[in-house]
Image (cartoon, rainbow over all chains, first blue to last red; front, side, top):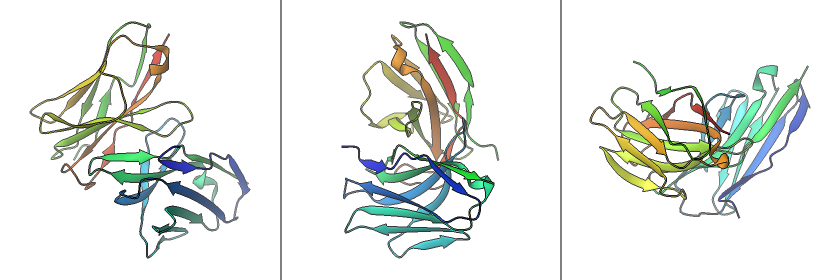
Length: 109
Length: 114
């Protein structure tokens, strides 16, 4: 079983739609969680951190449920520029990021 | 301030050869981590260097080795290349070991083994 698991997609949705990504992690010792965005053939870039209390950044909302070991990302009013691969990430052992497989999202006009 | 820079950007090697990839960390960052990203997968942690010492290693064989220099730049060396080593190799630097302060990825080196 992978330490961080995501639905690989792909997700194809129309512009303006709401998209939800889910992720589970197996190592309960994971300290911090993040969503990264990766454009085609580019490096991953931090999208947002994920907290138990939930956090919002514009159209993006992230949530962590430690009891269920579950992480989510919601994108509202999706834009063409949101097309990318979204990576769910856990920070473990004070040294390494553990990435999920990534979920590819395509927003269609 | 400059970000994390990696060289070369692309590389083609033959199976059995050796390769060295280079990473210059962001100014002021003393910790460097290396990741391998195969096509269609998320990045996988190879190892981390802190103040010139290896500080943690992922599930990679010993033919993957590294160095960190006094200026905190780093090298990743891979011996006896295999076809499965074809991947994007990412370097990330951070301000301090054990923290994600300023954790920044370079744009990667795309290695193809033929």
